[in-house]
Length: 445
Image (tube, rainbow, N blue to C red; front, side, top):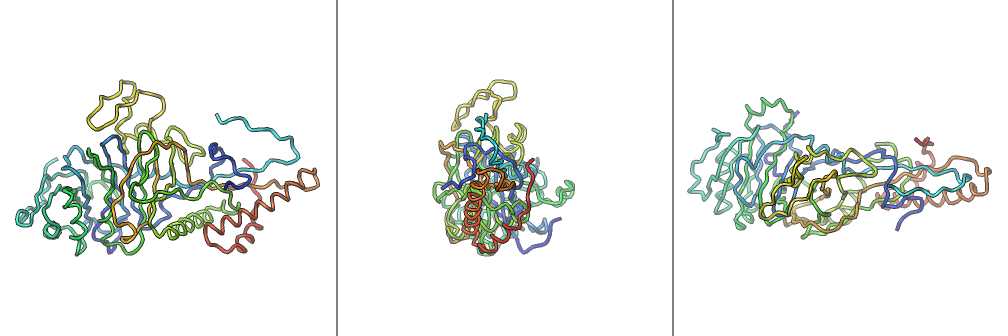
């Protein structure tokens, strides 16, 4: 259920270790993942980008009375009713499950067996909108309409104090002193997409949460307004951005984009779900602090026609369309005609021409003074925040000479695993080694 909280405004737009299989072939058993539920104060955004066309979907972690909810999003153009819709939360859930940092496990072979080389891996305006005093405040209501459980107005403004006053006068619960955060967008000539909950419509949905909003527009700017979301921040916030594109990995152009430490072997006791959760949260905390909350982390990049190992099935054609992918060729028909500012459509094929980049930002008002700007690169090298458990062979050292050599190398490997975990998390290495020694044997599947 929606719980009361102090939040009055929600603004969403906010060297390879031995024993590790090569990163180019991630085959293995998927045994766990670290999804967005690990992080508090986490907003999620889906960006589908093709040429100048952007489709933006927003889901917030808002907890409070629906009457207290307000969403203010700077947009480059005046949005029409047919450009805005409500989507289902499951679209975010599917992208999260598919791209979440994951744990994979492998099993050492019997060293006494002959070695075999592996084969290659093959509506009408809502009554709640009031316009009194708008002209005097320098605010213009460009349009108003309802979508699902939301009443929406599109505003333009000449000065930020007037916009702040208009929002307060018209019943939007925004924090005091919002004007300085609004001013840069007004100076850029941007419009404002403003939504609040229509309580009667929300009650009819029967939903226990506010469903995500999605809108599309054409603009040369490929960016994500996020500074407004810092107005009422009480500490570092997390933002997960799923970027869907045609050609390659997406990165930030105004902040450093780095890949998280990944594809290394770690002690096998992390197989316990709680242990892996604690590891990933602590590791991410450490990385964010080391970078002073000033970088954009890449958690995942992959061609969505396949995955290895799969934390969840790739999204279907219908799910990609729901997420805002507009460049898929018609099912069984010719490709759609091209539009200004957009790339020529791709011919129909069995695989969906969609790349997914998952970005994770932990930020503060001081560490991220600018909105996020992006670019699509030509890089198509797959990456995932994947961590490997390499389960040891449990046979006798007297079985053959190779067994004795194997067990000596195993002790050295396990020491490297312990040191790697201590370095990533800051955990006491002696405690790690104690837990290593107590790790239960696991039978290969």
